[in-house]
Amino acid sequence: MNTEKSDLYAAPLDNQWVKSSYSVGNGADCVRLMPIDGGIALDDSKRPDLPPLRYTPTEMAAFINAAKNGEFDHLIEP
Image (cartoon, rainbow, N blue to C red; front, side, top):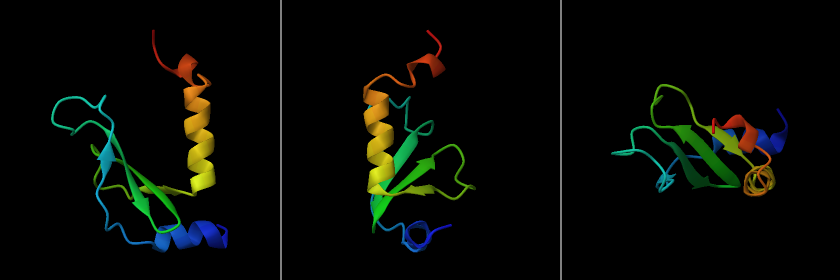
Protein backbone atom coordinates (compact mmCIF):
# COMPACT_ATOMS: atom_id res chain seq x y z
CA MET A 1 0.00 0.00 0.00
CA ASN A 2 1.42 3.38 -0.92
CA THR A 3 2.02 6.08 1.69
CA GLU A 4 -1.01 8.14 0.67
CA LYS A 5 -3.35 5.16 1.16
CA SER A 6 -1.62 4.17 4.41
CA ASP A 7 -2.25 7.67 5.72
CA LEU A 8 -5.95 7.34 4.90
CA TYR A 9 -6.21 4.12 6.91
CA ALA A 10 -4.59 5.88 9.87
CA ALA A 11 -7.09 8.78 9.76
CA PRO A 12 -9.65 8.78 12.59
CA LEU A 13 -13.32 8.20 11.84
CA ASP A 14 -14.51 11.21 13.80
CA ASN A 15 -17.01 12.85 11.43
CA GLN A 16 -20.65 12.10 10.66
CA TRP A 17 -21.57 9.35 8.23
CA VAL A 18 -23.55 10.53 5.20
CA LYS A 19 -26.03 8.17 3.58
CA SER A 20 -27.94 8.35 0.35
CA SER A 21 -31.51 9.59 0.32
CA TYR A 22 -32.15 6.39 -1.64
CA SER A 23 -31.37 4.24 1.42
CA VAL A 24 -34.16 1.95 2.57
CA GLY A 25 -36.10 2.37 5.82
CA ASN A 26 -34.21 3.38 8.93
CA GLY A 27 -30.85 3.50 7.16
CA ALA A 28 -29.70 0.06 8.29
CA ASP A 29 -29.27 -1.09 4.68
CA CYS A 30 -27.05 1.54 3.18
CA VAL A 31 -23.64 2.49 1.98
CA ARG A 32 -22.37 5.44 3.98
CA LEU A 33 -19.61 7.96 3.33
CA MET A 34 -17.56 10.02 5.77
CA PRO A 35 -15.06 12.77 5.06
CA ILE A 36 -11.71 11.97 6.69
CA ASP A 37 -8.32 13.66 6.66
CA GLY A 38 -7.06 13.27 3.09
CA GLY A 39 -10.03 11.40 1.69
CA ILE A 40 -13.32 9.62 2.16
CA ALA A 41 -14.28 6.52 4.13
CA LEU A 42 -16.95 4.15 2.75
CA ASP A 43 -18.92 1.83 5.01
CA ASP A 44 -21.70 -0.78 4.73
CA SER A 45 -24.11 -0.20 7.62
CA LYS A 46 -25.17 -3.88 7.50
CA ARG A 47 -21.61 -4.99 8.29
CA PRO A 48 -20.33 -2.91 11.22
CA ASP A 49 -17.84 -5.72 11.91
CA LEU A 50 -15.90 -4.82 8.75
CA PRO A 51 -13.57 -1.82 8.64
CA PRO A 52 -14.56 0.98 6.25
CA LEU A 53 -12.74 1.27 2.95
CA ARG A 54 -10.85 4.51 2.39
CA TYR A 55 -10.39 6.42 -0.86
CA THR A 56 -8.47 9.46 -1.99
CA PRO A 57 -10.47 12.39 -3.42
CA THR A 58 -9.15 11.48 -6.89
CA GLU A 59 -10.34 7.87 -6.57
CA MET A 60 -13.76 8.91 -5.27
CA ALA A 61 -14.19 11.56 -7.99
CA ALA A 62 -13.35 8.97 -10.67
CA PHE A 63 -15.97 6.60 -9.27
CA ILE A 64 -18.69 9.25 -8.86
CA ASN A 65 -18.11 10.64 -12.35
CA ALA A 66 -18.22 7.16 -13.87
CA ALA A 67 -21.47 6.41 -12.01
CA LYS A 68 -23.00 9.69 -13.19
CA ASN A 69 -22.04 8.76 -16.76
CA GLY A 70 -23.82 5.40 -16.47
CA GLU A 71 -20.71 3.22 -16.64
CA PHE A 72 -22.06 0.87 -13.95
CA ASP A 73 -25.72 0.80 -15.00
CA HIS A 74 -25.31 -2.69 -16.48
CA LEU A 75 -24.57 -4.01 -12.97
CA ILE A 76 -28.05 -3.13 -11.70
CA GLU A 77 -31.00 -5.35 -12.51
CA PRO A 78 -33.62 -3.60 -14.65
